[in-house]
Image (cartoon, rainbow over the protein chains, first blue to last red):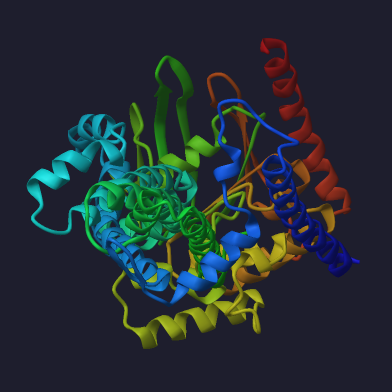
Amino acid sequence: MKFDTRKKELLINLLSLVVFVILWQGVLILTREGIFNIPFIRLRDIPTPVETWHALLGSLFTHINGPNLTYGIYNHVFASMERVIEGGIIAFIIGVPVGIGVGYSKLIGNIFNPIIEIIRNMPPMAWIPLAIFIFVSGGSIFIVFIGVVFPIILNTIQGVRSTDERLLDAARTLGASESMIVTKVVIPSAFPSIMTGLRIGLGVGWMAIVAAEMVIKSPVGLGYFIWNMGDLGRYAEMIAGMIVIGVIGYLMNISILLLQRRFIKWVD
Amino acid sequence: MGRLVLDSVSKKFNTFQALENVSFEVADGEFVCLLGPSGCGKTTVLRLAAGLVAPNGGNLFLDGKKIDGVNKECGFVFQEYALFPWRTVKENIEFGPQAKGLNKNECDRISKHYIDLVGLNGFENHYPKELSGGMKQRVGIARAYANSPKLLLMDEPFGALDAQTRNLMQGELLRIWEKEHISVLFVTHSVDEAVFLGDKVVVMSARPGTIKEIFDVKLPRPRIRTSLEANIIRDKVLKSLGIEIKLAMKEK
C-alpha cells in the first residue's frame, strides 16, 4: 500500500519534469517558427532543452577554447563546492559557539544581538565590493561565510532557547554542573536545529558563491562559468551551467537531510 | 535519613500568592501523598523541596539542613517523564552517576542494578521514543533512584498513563520503594492513588495554597484497593477535597 503510494508520487514527480521539458521545447519551436511570440522577450534566443543537453554533455569534461580558456564544467563544480565547503566550515566553527552563547546567556545575547541583527540583514552580495577590496584571495569564501553563518547562528539560538525547561530541571536535580548542562543537555537538544541551520546556510552559501564568482573574477567557478558563457553568446552552455547549479544545490540539501536522519535517531 | 520539613513556607509569583504558610513533614522513609485541586501549588511544593525555586517566606529542611539552591539529595520524577530523548535507557539512568563524576564501571553497575529493579532488561539501548508511557516512567524512576537520593519527589508521575498501566505502576512503585526505602513526596490528583500509596495524605486548599487537612493512612501493606477501611479513608479525603474543589470552581 505504502510502497504503491510512494511509487505513484515518484511517477508524478518524473512526469512533471518531462512535461516541463516538453513545454520548454514546444514553446521555443513555435517561437522559432514565428507562430508564437511574447513582445519584449527574445524567446528565440533561448536554447532548447535538446541544445542544452548537447551543450551539457559537450562541456562537462572538455575544455572550450574561445577568447577565454574555459575548463569543463566538472572543474567549475569542484571549485565552487570547495569554496562553499571551506566557507561553510568556518561559518560552522564560528556560528555554533556564538549561537550557543547568545541563546544560553542573556549577557552574551545582549552583547552580540545588536551586531547580529544588523549584519544579518545585509545580503551576502552586498559584501562583495568590500571582499574584493580587502581580500587578496579567498574573497568568495568570505561571501559564502557571510551567507552560511547567520542561518547557523539564528537556528542555533532558536534550538538552544527551545530546550525543554523540564529537561534542564531534571539535569539540575540529578546534580549536573552548569557546564554539564550546556554540553549534555543544551547542545544535544539544539543539535537538530543546528543541522537545520547548516542546511539552510549552505543553501544560501551556494547562491552567494555563484553571485560572488560572477563579480570576483577568478578563472574557475560555476558563477564565472555561466557569466563567461553568457558573454561569449554560448547560451546553451550557460543554461547547462544553471541547471548544474540547481541540481547540486538540491543534492546538497538532500544529503544533509539524509545525514541528519541517519545520525539523529532519537528524534520523534 | 530523608526527613523533609516545611516550616511555614510561602511562595509568591509576581503578585500571585501560590503558597501561604505551608507546614508539614515527610518523616524518614515515609510515603506522603499531596492532594489538592489543580492550581493549588502542589507542584510548587515539589519544586521548593528540590531547590529549583526559593520560598519567599519560611524554610525547608532536609535532615535538618536548610534547602538552599538545587537540592542534589532528592530525585525528581516528572509527569511527562522528562527523559533525555537523545540518551538511551541506560544513558538516561547514568546521567546522575555521571554528574557525580563516577567512572564507567560504577555507572555500568548502577544502571544495571536499576534496570533490573524497574524491570527494563532488554531495553537498555532503546531510545525513549521507542518506549511506552509506562516504560518511560520506569526509566524516570530508575534515573531518580540511580543518584541514591534521600528523598524522592514525584509530580503526578502516572498522570499521563491509562488506568490499567497506572494501577500496575503504582504496585511497581511500592515494590521498588519497599526494596530501596527512601522518603517519598508524591503529588497526585487522584484520591484513590493517594490512599493506595500513602502513609499520609496531605490535602491542600487552593488560592492561596495552604494545608487543609492531613490524614494518616494506617492500613497494612500490601493494601487492598476495595477494602472497607480504604473506602472509609477515601470517603473522608474526598469530603475534605470535595469542598475545596467547589471553592476553586466558584473562583474561576
